[in-house]
Length: 296
Image 1 (tube, rainbow, N blue to C red):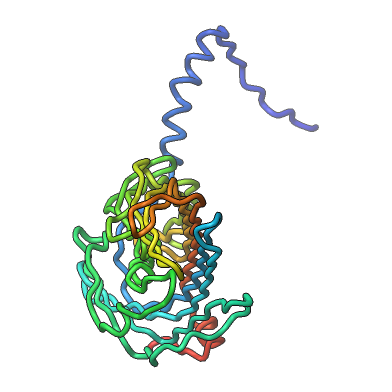
Image 2: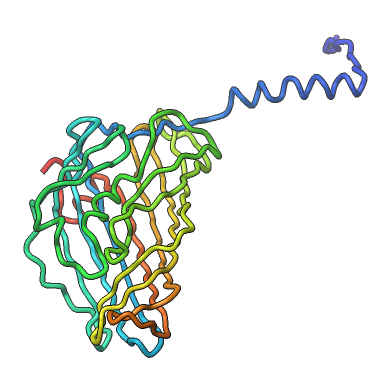
């Protein structure tokens, strides 16, 4: 004889009470599933990063038809000294510029392999200063500042746990050498947070906050040109919980509002600057592909 499964008596709740119960229970359930990512920068071992920078400049109008373009590729090893300090060593660095016909020509740079800089963090996770080899930090590379490249390895990361849509602000160096030394204030926001091994990872987006005009200077064949314009900066990054960024992409554009000649008069035309920088943390296999071995 086949037994029938026991049927539990059903309980019908009034619709309004059932809806109220769901509203009370649902937030609690979601809170238990909400993920967060630990910011800050506390790596426990050296890491190698590949950095690619592409920058362009161009005038329009009668003042000048000068155009410029620079491409830079570097491999940089970051060795943590403490939560307040890290050393950045050049493993490889090369740059090229566009000649008058637009062809790419290798830039004659000193051999910078082995040169190093020290980055200090105050508070932890927020790069505040870079010092080191003058040949490296003062390298004459059109449209590119090596200080900005090195500090670009460490976008600002406050300490603490952040969840989706949480934000923070931080200062980053100007992406163009001819815009002066005033830093750029940027806002960052956490996107998706997902499991990653024993921790979590997150996507981050950022953008420039300031709407004030920025002063610039730019040499031309006939005269130095100055003026003001507006900078736009966008940022995307992938973040490992407690270990900093594994990859970032930064795009910046600058468009002048007016041009002033060295003699004091004004000229028709405009200046446009574009810069893109991509940073990628390399694994051991990728380092071997570059002829680099972790720990060398």
